[in-house]
Length: 192
Image (cartoon, rainbow, N blue to C red):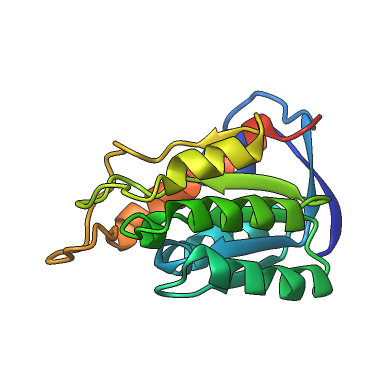
């Protein structure tokens, strides 16, 4: 499941279209794998569905998410992802850095992470709306470090929440919906 995959129309590629749909499937985008999934608990929650969707596209998903991870921990996973041949990275990070008071260090660590990801196709996905403010400016630091690359703004998205979860983690259905949005975003924005 390594190498180059050419994908058809987004909804067809993700299996959402009817098998009776008469429209032809034209190859429109090229995605290179394996795909590393980096980040915190959101990445851990997204891994089963992102992995299923990746396999449906003939790609391998390399999961490197860690619950409670800060950007420094994410940086430690990048060499492992590269060693396993990752060609693309989906990064779901920032939420655990929101409450930090060392804004300058968070920004520096994020810039370093993006620099260490150079050479891979990077897809940054912001955390969904959380009950706590981004005091460290982590989201703004990711956007700045990405230097104009496309990113998926998940804030304000209507994701079904897990019952009783005070940290804004989605339910199983919420993660499935979010994973579908992420792959749709990637397929729509992938270089032709």
